[in-house]
Length: 163
Image (cartoon, rainbow, N blue to C red; front, side, top):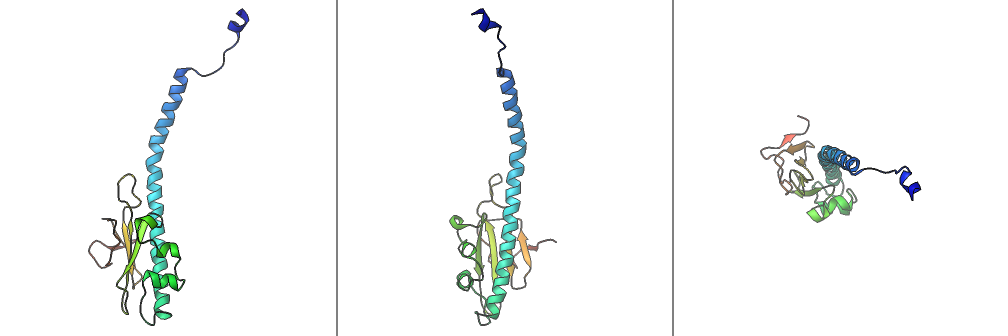
């Protein structure tokens, strides 16, 4: 019995474990907001590129299958100019990278393609800006985001991206 008492006991004390847990908590408190901000930035980048793709698809549709008319999302998907994921991202349930998309007013002279985040919550939001592009090919952003894709790129608050 005396032999068992004199053995070196190995392991961590409760204080050591609490210190490690506290350090992990501090690191998580610093890292999580940055991770969420990175995710929002990636979603916004994806939305911008998706709108550029839609603009290119509209130009192709206009000069080929559209007979000098711009097309709807369904027209662009039917002609295989955009993929079905982007073409069906019109509701939050089918969002692409946290954004929903819409094309309004396609006719012989103009179209407006817009993207809006599915959530604008400060902590868990999927984006902080709305985007739109029209027949001019200029990508515009509005920092006052709502969850409904914009229908008019000429509306107040939409400024060219990069300016």
